[in-house]
Every structure is written in C-alpha cells, then in structure tokens.
Length: 466
Ligand code: GLU
Picture (tube, rainbow, N blue to C red):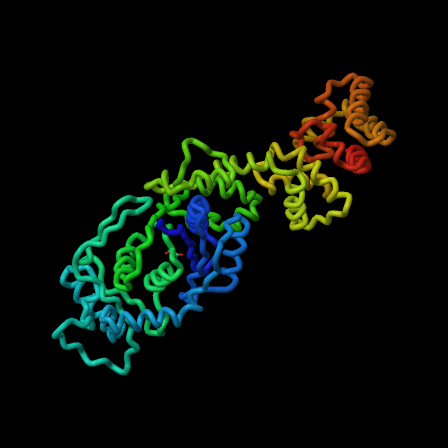
C-alpha cells in the first residue's frame, strides 16, 4: 500500500513569514495537494526567548493571505514537551542517548585544545557511555544536557528530492545535544519526533538544513521510525547575489501585501523561484497544483527579481475584478487619511477599471485615484508648458460649458469638441492643461473618461483655479 502524502511547514515564530519560508510552505502545500495528501502547520517555538504570539499571528495571517490552507495545526512544539521527554527517557534507557555534565568552561577548554592541535572542534565524547568505560563523576554544580549517541562511523545517505543523492560520513558529526540544560529539547530532536508522530512523508525545507539531516536520520533510525523523504530547496538570492535578507530590503510576505501585491500573483511568482513547468510564467493555483509533482525543482539558487514580480502582479491586476480592486484601493486610501463617503465608494470600481491597465500594484492604483478625493497641486513645469495665455480663455469657456451639461462621457466630449472648434485649437492643446489642472499630471487615459469620474463641481473648480 502506498503511503499517504503528508507534508508540513514548520516555521519558528521569531518574526514574520519570510519569503523563503513562504516558498517552502508553498512547495509543501502544492505537493500535498497534487497527490491528494495533507499539509500540516507546526510552530517550532522551542526557542522560548525569541518566540512570540505576535509572530505566530503574522505567520497565520500570511499563510491565509497566500491561500496556503492546512489540514492540521497549528501544532505547537511547546505543547508537546511531555512527549519529547518520554522519547528522551526511552533513548537514555536504551543506551542511545546520555547525560553530559560538561560545564560551558570545560567545553571551551576542550575546543581550545582541539584548535591548538589543529583539529576541527567537536564534542570528544567524554560522557558517552561505552562498554567497560569509566565515566567521570557528575557534578552537582552542572545541569546536564542530553546528547544523542551518534554512530561513530559509517555513512548517512539519502536521495534528496531536490539535490539528488547526498552522503555524509558519521565521523564528520558529533554527539548532538538533544536536551538543553533548562530541559527544553532542541530543534534537531523535536523535528524528528514530530515528523515521525505526524506521519510526515516528505520534508521540504531550506538547504541551510542539509547539515542537520544526517543527525535527524540517525535519530529516526535510533527510534525505529520510518524515514521521510527530504527535499532541500536552494536559497533565494537578492539582486546583489547575497541570500535574501532583511538588511537588503523587504523579505516578509506582509511587506508585499502592504506594497499592493495580490496574493495570487505572489503565489505564482514564488512558485517560479526554484521550480518551473516548461516556460509557463503565469498560471493559476489550480494549474500549479496539477503540475507540482516534485520534479523540475532546481538545484541552484533562485534569483529574486523585483521587476519580474511587478510584471507578474501587473498582469493579475489587469485581470482582477474591479470591485475587489476597489476594496483594496479603498483600504490604501483610507490608510492615507482620505475619508471615503458612500458616493466615493460606489465610484471606485469604475475608477479601478479605467486605471488598472497602467498599474503594477494596488498602491500605484491608489496613487492615481487620490486625485479624485484630495486636492491636486498642478506641477509648475506642466503649467509652464501647457497653460499658455492663448489657451486660458478656452479653459474658462470649457468650465462654463461644463456647468450646463449633463455629466457623462459623451456630453463631456461634445463640450470639449465645441470649445476647441470655437477657439481654433487642436485637441492636445486643450486636453493637456485640462489634465494638468484637474489631475495634477499630464499623462492620463482619454480625458473625457478621466473627467467623467470626477464630480462636475470639482472639475469646474479646478479649471477656474488657473
Ligand atoms: N523551524 C525550522 C526553520 O524554520 C524548520 C526546519 C524544518 O523544516 O525542518 O528553519
């Protein structure tokens, strides 16, 4: 019988959901969904000093925003301490783990001596029980740690879903601490007990964990637990070729939500970082799920490309429903202190429809729509270029003409045509100063369409302000 596919994402709640973790979550989620399996969210909060509820909330909000729904969880490691303690006791009982009473000073001396001898620093196994070996006497002054009795030699080999076969010799790794002096178990131990208990079949995670995997495999084996398959996903590099990090710009999912990106665009873009399906660039989550079977994952680092993300987002904005965009833009505008009454709210979808083609984000869309709700300041250079003495009478005539018409696009266009004919002007000569005065910028969609979405009173007032 084939095993049920179960994947998980196991973030540590020490900050927001990092883009790298979001991408791993996305791969894990898509893999589970592709095979009709299950996706688990586990919160790895054993670093008590740095874990916060606020981070958990942010992680949950970002997962929800991206639509990465999970079937189980969030499961908190700190609520599983009893289980870990029982497994540790069992390992000690079976002689597969042991208490080590080395003080920090003693460990420092040990490493110092190893360095002096030109050796790689490692735990020398002085508390490791062996048949016939006499152990030192435990000191009351030292709170012991528990170490895992790692095999002394032999290879650990696994066939990585992403990287292919990897082999590490046990001589390169020492006896890992699995319980700290304060009694809290460590990551490499909890992760194994959890992946075992939660019947995880596939572990996708960042490749900074490749070096932890041999320890984890040894612990799985010591527990008699079946091994999951591991897939280590290469890092995401920033445009400076360095690992994407906070110091080099936005790295949280939340920051992109705030910057006006749509979740489906983010999901689409993130999935292409280290994975491909032919040369498909734009696809739905359903397509992603139907294609994502663990193949075509790249072995080399992915490149974060803000321009491409922006392009992807602009494609999604173009196709987005206007009412949905209106709600997003309303939130942006409100955030800028603009009070939207019911009339404004009702007008927003048509405004979004008119401007969405030229906007890469909902923030850019809000930048455009501000002119409808707040005073504009025409640019001096636009006025200098377009507000000539010759055109001023035509602008005032246009304002007068607008006062008498029914406010719709056809009537606006007819009024403009009449004025340019009466004043012997060409269309742009009138349209440019109209845009400068009413919109505060001179590049806009067709002027009649833009004006229609203002109230007549505002347009007249701005035209007469020249
Ligand atoms: N808490 C670990 C991290 O955030 C999880 C690693 C794993 O998936 O095993 O890196």
